[in-house]
Every structure is written in structure tokens, then in C-alpha cells.
Length: 185
Image 1 (tube, one colour):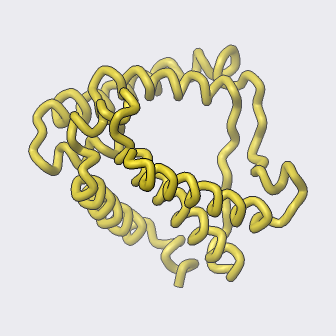
Image 2 (cartoon, helix red, strand yellow; image 1 turned 90 degrees about the vertical axis):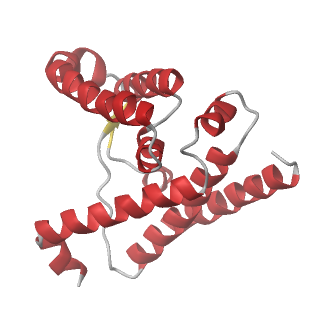
């Protein structure tokens, strides 16, 4: 089934659209499309965003690795580098701080009728993507390729089975989430 899906681009696009709408809806229901919640996260006074995203990381990490262990999916890590991570983090962080939304929460804010998310966020994403695509060739070698670490994953680096990293990471993240909740954060 998954191999047939992998070969059908139209179904992939439709599935991506449906999952994206569901993702935006769930973010909106979780309250992370609200400016005050996002700013609260940036000011370290409201940890709703962190709790939702870490919960998604735990569920996604366990789900992807379970599917991989069953032979239903293959991982295709993308190459990375310190240079691209720093540049991406600076662009993301600056836009996040200015608008108070990230690409995921922009979708939920637009869905609930936020005009600043529509015009500032969605238009900003499109313009920013266009600018980055235009300057990418000039940045690739001198900046983005610095300290290239390739496609290696943490389990590959440690030369261990993926579950040796996944299970402790899931336990630690879950314990951290429980602590955040019990601390009233």
C-alpha cells in the first residue's frame, strides 16, 4: 500500500493537504494560533506550544520508528550542516519574534481568521522563501555548507540500534512534559 502511495504524486499531494489542514486544526484547537500564547512561550510564561510540539515529537518519533521496524517505511534523512542550521535558525527566530507565529501556527491563525497571520505570516513566508531561493546559490558554498555533517543520524553516529536512542529520548521527553504539567507551567 505504501509503495503504491509513494508512486502516486496526486494522492501524495491530496494526502499532504488533508494532513496539513488537520495539523492546522489541531494546532488551533490547542490554542497555539493565538498571539498571546506564542508570546507567552517566547517570554517563558506559557509553555503550551512547547508541550504540544514535544508531544508531537514523542508520538511521531515512536510512530516513525515502529513503522520502520515493521519494514513499512524507510528513513531518508536530508544532509545538514552547522552553517545551514545557524542561518535557518536565525531566519526562523527573527520572523518568529517579529510576527509571534511560526509556519505551523500561521496556518492555524489564518484558519481562525487572523489577518496579521494571513498578510504578515503567509505573505512573509512566500516572500521570504522567494528571497532565500534567490540568494541560495550565493550562500551555498561560503555559508550553508560550513561544518557539513551529511545524512548521519544519531543512532548511526553512536553505532547502535535506533531504539537505543528512541526509547530513552521518548522517556526523557515524556518525563519533562509530566514535570512541566505538574509544575503548572
